[in-house]
Image (cartoon, rainbow, N blue to C red; front, side, top):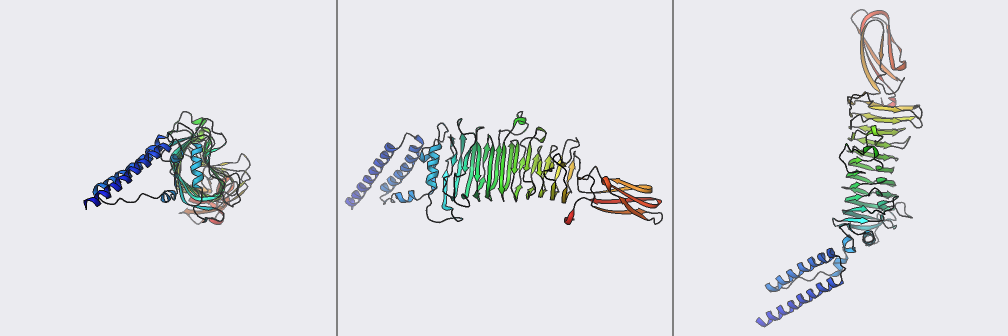
Length: 482
């Protein structure tokens, strides 16, 4: 019995010695990257300690993990490819090698037609900060179901100035969409005032979440064509500041630029840029966004809607902080539940003179008492001539001038004519489409009628002089929505 136990121990001691030899051969074959050596050492050390414990206890050790199980992992650590997590040397080539391996489909399955399913592969940045000298561009082969996460990328001083740190932007593609279901999460992207942040071209169902994008020269995020990009819970700013920056007048660039349809921007803070969000596409939604990028007084814009005649944008529960909204020829625009601080307002800009189906309702406006209109018409490029279904009302205002498409007033007088001037409040000049009034008097039953509504003044006349109070309600361009 003792002999059998001695044989058992000798056998496993030999295994342990072979394992140690394997460990030293790993170190000998490894490059001088200390991080890589340490990672492999820790794996072997853990296995060695387990084996020794098994031998001492006289139990059979568990088998070594097969190389096939390691090879089957779809998590690619960029440090395994030689990327420097300290940011001292250029890691572009190493990260691209890891990305190339991640882009090898594990099967012949696909997402939308023509887009290979990568099976949920991950490119893990291992919490490092990497210096890159050219874009981390996804391979041209259409693919999806990939996540890039957990680290920082910083543009080097020789990064090309017309490119982005990360690009979903193939040089050529035969598919309707280049990529599908690509996720960017927990990333810090530093453009070093040379590069943009992320460029997404003709991609489907892309997610950008929990990212911090700064020092961009052009755009923090640029989306062109494609469909259904979701941007959420992220921070963007050309300069790292928390407001009242002495260089605010010189802020440039655009934090988020969307040239496409059906995208969502949710729970975003934009703390510096000339333009917070610029949209030239249909059916986009913006919710829970705080813009304090560059004050309107310094030439900045919080949200710029630049698709004249086909806006189809919803802006809900946002905070426009000293920077406002500009919409060119808005058609189907909804702004509600938002807070405008520091004389921030909504500017409706005429390009071809069209404004239709616009709702600006139930917002709060706070200003400095300088008489700034909460909603203003910019007709420097020509007057609005095609106007229908515009509703501006039920807004709470303090320190700014109320503008509305609906108003009420009362006037008490003794005479035959009652004139009520609505021009200080109505949005459109010389336009009243609907009037309701009531005359209350305790003396007699005079005949009375509405005589005139020109210049946004309502004139009511009676056939005899009488002491009366007139109550009037007016509406502009309500159209079929009234």
